[in-house]
Image (cartoon, rainbow, N blue to C red; front, side, top):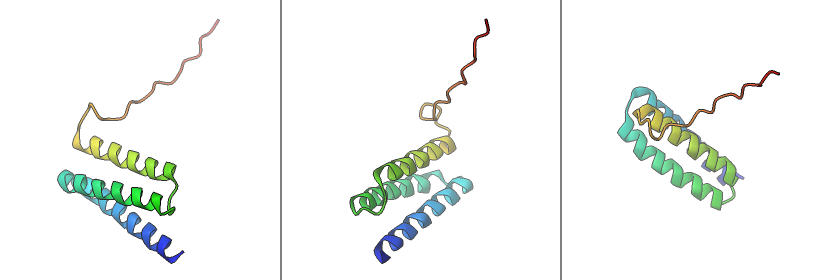
Length: 88
């Protein structure tokens, strides 16, 4: 229980630092930190601290935010258009 809370706190601090780096526009350091964050999340999943879907969601959102901040249009998320109902 104590180990789990320590791991969660460490990962949350990494996520906070990642968001601060993106806000400051420091893309290179954010790339390094997102790699460390991915490794930490994977290790936390193997130790049953987080579920696999939670780790996947966090990693995906962090990469989307990084690509968006870097201005890479090819790796930006695809926005689906809303379906329009046909009238008779």
